[in-house]
Length: 258
Image 1 (tube, one colour):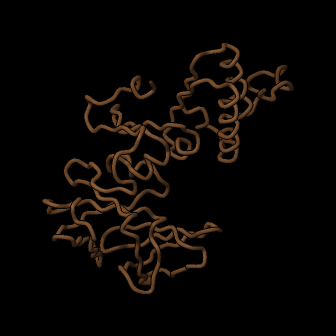
Image 2 (spheres, rainbow, N blue to C red):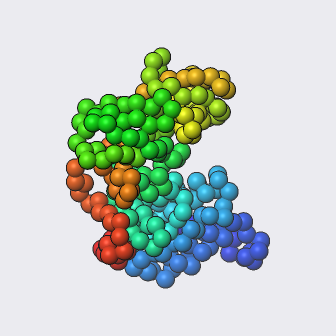
């Protein structure tokens, strides 16, 4: 199953990192457990092998049909592999849900910042009715101001992939451009705030060039400045299967797994 027949005569020190991981998996599988617990099993592998092993682990889990609890600090692994993701902070369970749920509708700013690469852009803005005023030239008018009613300030979140460069819009200053082949990462400054944008590969603004950007209101995240709880996300309303808490009296890992 693991393709390690030709390794059985070798000593552990003669095996590569990936081969050692396959042997460890074999030792766990032959015990026929009811649950696998994997604690960062791919952390010591190089990027290419880690991606390969990630695919193999998913195939193996599907074939065996055994519940697997997979611990990782790599949110890419969690998003790629998890049927359900439990996000923890300081030992407290923050949210449980599918990859789409925790990405599109995080329960708080911590989850929003942890899930997604590059990380979400978050900054403070003052509230004046339906208008939000943030760093630099940032001014935005909400069509529905109800999420920020009664607040003087709010935390605004915009994911890098939701930013579009336009001819006229909110202005920022380009700092560094990282070509990725199929897209570019643009690191810019909005007032004193650093902004990251994932833009089309054909867009290549130069250093210190002023560029304008825009985004859809549906892509806007809003967080309470005191508690960090989400006021507006991409998925509005209740989400089946998604749970979250901001306090230590919330759902336990055992309850989440059940």
